[in-house]
Amino acid sequence: MTTERIAENVTFAYWVPNVSGGLVTSDIEQRTDWNYEYNKKLARTAENNGFEYALSQVRYEASYGAEYQHESTSFSLALLLATERLKVIAAVHPGLWQPAVLAKLGATADHLSGGRFAVNVVSGWFKDEFTHLGEPWLEHDERYRRSAEFLQVLRKIWTEDDVDFRGDFYRIHDFTLKPKPVHTPELFQGGNSTAARRNGGRYADWYFSNGKDFDGITEQVVEVRDHARAVGREVSIGLNGFIIARDSEKEAKEVLKEIVAKANRPAVEGFRGAVQQAGASTGDRKGMWADSSFEDLVQYNDGFRTQLIGTPEQIAERIVAYRRRGVDLILGGFLHFQEEIEYFGSRVLPLVREIEASDNARELTPV
Image (tube, rainbow, N blue to C red; front, side):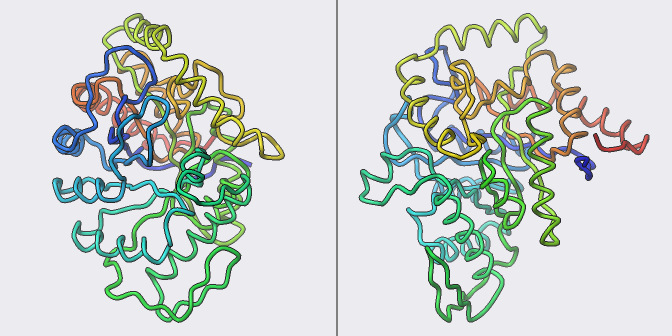
């Protein structure tokens, strides 16, 4: 089996730094900020430098370097209203949201933003966020079964009238949403596990993967698209990657070395303990973070594994190599967001487009 479809062009997204502490759990300087004014300026910079999407993070209480957190849906809407083209994806937890309530919010956000609001369904890794709020903590595969129902209910409410849904987690009776969204919001499913891949293929528009090397992402692309094909659907693939683009490879690698050397070890180890039970609790140990090393977890979504670290030419070549393996979107994290997004837009993105144009002229065969 091949990865089949290759996007004409890779799409780019960035992590919204709406929680404190930056995108690496390290004491290295990070010229970034979690406040709204910084993020409003950053969103405008990103949409003017080739980024089509932004992903707002979700945390509900202080944890592992993220002492302060802005709520994802409201923050996403604020960024949408401050921009013109950028699509903003709000991460949400089933179990802490009733899907019909989120569907109502999403429809309003769609109208206010001209169709630029999207949702990333994250099934939950931080047990304390649920138990501290008095909500039950389900085992891994049960959390993903709940997410599968959540995705189905959202889409039905946005696209149908008189909705009835009888699931194990959600019961909807004769419900009609008005006004419906003008553009049905895109649905993203995050994860790595077998259960996440099934949800992504069967119910989402996009499947988001943690950082992976070529072999790791190829395996996921094939499996997710097999699930989609089985139910007559298509799904797009997003891949997380922490981007360190510098004028020389040596400089970029020195930055990575410094990030890891200055890691906040207690915070990283605490995060490791919290998340690795989630991945290890799956029967096949394919869950998120199940095999992540300490170095991987300094960037808490395995972003170093994607190896987007080097010169603009090296990073552009590697991004296009991921495209050849079926990746549609790169979700980038940065050490110094404002200046590095500008650098990426001026130095890396044009090279990506040049290589893509050459590939397209040669009618590239999927890997």
